[in-house]
Length: 261
Image (cartoon, rainbow, N blue to C red):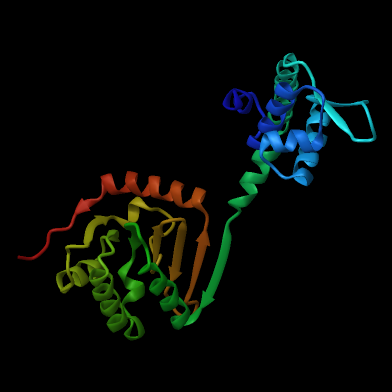
């Protein structure tokens, strides 16, 4: 019986006290709590709650002791109906206010932007990519990296990326300098996959001189030509997803890199 009452919406202690009321009839707090197996103080609190729910009422009797009596069990049906009506109103209110909630959700993905200048700033941005748990998508113009400050550091970066098993797919500008760099590349291809893309296929950025990385929820842009060496990190899942999709389209058009035997 107790489980039935609990299933109809009362918690364990409320169900115990209500069942005691049903079985005892008009009774004192001490009689009810003894029957329900709880303390008198706690039982009084439960009886007050049941009175608010409409499951119990105070009644007059002999002497000055407070007595309670259970309401008819059909009150349980009315209680559940009232709760049903409340939840239907809450559901309607939630549906009406959903556009406001969605607008707040969009604000939560408002991009954050970090800007760093100089060679060390750019290096620090790329060091962070080594923490990626996903494959890195890159568009690379090797001309920007072909300066003394970046050459040896770039080789160390690639070795560390391979050691950490961070995969990278690279769309590399098909230029004489890019071909020369690839001919001399001695890094591991286990975690690196490259394809050529012609600069004329990307009109307007034929002299990019830098690199774009897309991974996780981040977009990294590095401009490596002096005097304006700088890097930008944009954190936005929406922007990252869009650029990943565009990268996949461009990857299909890329030309496979022929590696020297």
